[in-house]
Image (cartoon, rainbow, N blue to C red; front, side, top):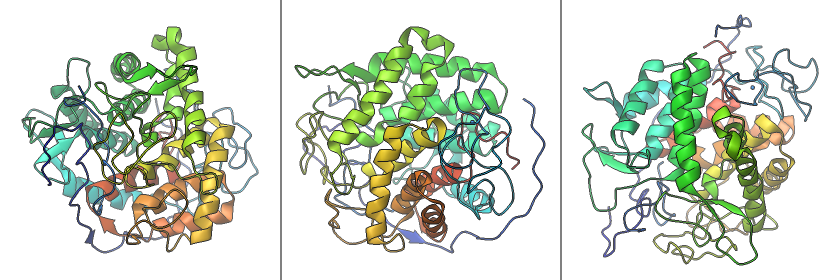
Length: 465
């Protein structure tokens, strides 16, 4: 890990010195099974859990009774929304190789997808990155294996509920709580099961982790039929609004912004890959958020105002770090000049298609489709089988081409707003990739949950495992 003469926000040195390990590709087979029956119910002290730029190589729906708005049924393709029960009889991509109805309310799912790849990825991830702790907690080993970041815990919570592993979900949530600050957010970096402070750049929150943890709790409330998770989600969501959103400080701007951390960010420092409009729309429907419903919906809409401003007019690519006006630089925008290659589409920004795809398949947001379709068109010019993971915003490759699940999986999620042939091609390529380390293996799980139809507000409880 490099050393710095200043104390930077969390994330400024997050994904450096990451190696890529190659092992055997995940098993790709066809699975035939019957449709399952319906189951029962100062910047120095705070900052973002982001990758911190790209200076180094990285290895890395039914409506919901508790307030969700995402249906598990509905049209299998196109934009007609289902009522949350019986799927529409037409449309491409309504099933898959195993004949399960994996469709979302909007968009497509890949044909030929099964759960075998997801199960293999889940097993590999648990075997390599999870450490059980003696106090009924568990942590996720980061790039530096003795350390754990809040991002990893939140990814683990999403993956655990998506794979119906309540014990591990509870363990991750306990670790999050054990290592939380006064605002109820896990500190972005801690060491070992004991949660020691590893360095001076380790405290306070990273917003992406907090919004993912809150969404995982909402999914757990439904999946595990336990309102206690919903209560915890409501508390966390309220804190997110109070401490990690802020009104623009620019004259003439009425935008509501998602800060990258509880202790820094705003108009002069934003991370587009943290924007999660799908989640905000679900938060807005929570009874606990009735007084903030309009604000959550505004945050969702304003996210697209910003993404449209940040995206390159030809490629649709957005930078890792940027200010509200769209300015950035090698070290980042003026409010957070701590990074490396902050101006490119890289290890942070690479997650943006995944987050926007969720908004499209859950809510059918037109702006989400517009954003995704432009990026998909760019990817097709490059070829999904050779696409890299770092680009200048104009589409010029940045550094060595690295063909990785990090980008291919995100682009496959993004293609769920496109046509069936494109989606199938992108998804098939994602299943061939075998780059393994904390970050690629973690995102592989999330991408596969989306592709297999399991990433809804009830964590795919309508699908058998």
